[in-house]
Length: 88
Image (cartoon, rainbow, N blue to C red; front, side, top):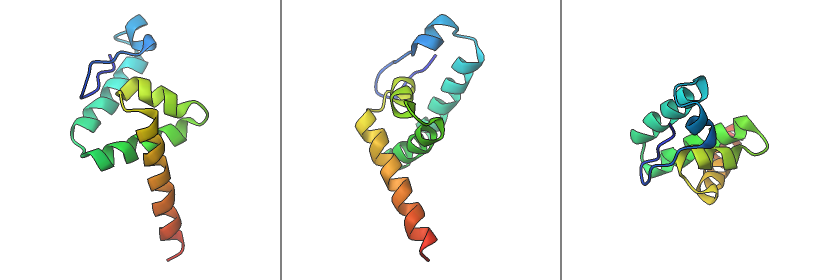
């Protein structure tokens, strides 16, 4: 299921279908997070949350164990870096 680095967290979908496609996606996300430092974790999860649209931050908080505040910060950092790149 969905396990974060700091605490084991399993989302409802993974509890219901631990070997399903969604659980595999959540496991993959958390495996990538293991390799990243804190800054890159929140930015990576921020990108994923933006891709999911409305409710994405809450979904990713449940999947990763990161706080919604941390994910929102990652979203802002990505948006700011995109703006600074587009003005170059």
